[in-house]
Structures are given as C-alpha cells and as structure tokens.
Length: 66
Image (tube, rainbow, N blue to C red; front, side, top):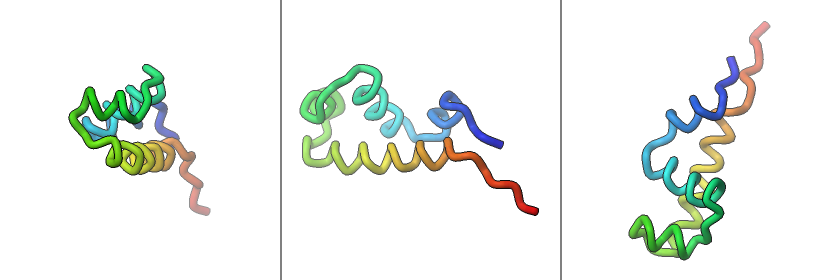
C-alpha cells in the first residue's frame, strides 16, 4: 500500500519534518534553516538529504509479492 504525503510526513521524526517543511514549503535556504533550527549550516545539507531520501522511500509504491 502506498503512503500518501501526509502519512509519510508523520512517519518522519520532528526534525526531519521541520527541515523538509522549511526547505520545500517555505523555500528557505540552508542558512535560514540553520538560523531557525539552531543547526550549523554545514549540518543542514546532509540532514536535508537524508530526510528527503527517507521521505522518498516512504512514498515509493510497495511492489506486490507474487
């Protein structure tokens, strides 16, 4: 069963949800996200990458086993 975006966001931890929201909904830069979250700018990029990968994995359709 494929999860929708809302369910996928709920499956992420709060930090992952926050940085994804700030980056892709609010359109903030890594520096802005760092300022809001208290993260170092150099930490935002890899955390955002991992959160995107996790969300993408949750949104991929599950293949049926024959």
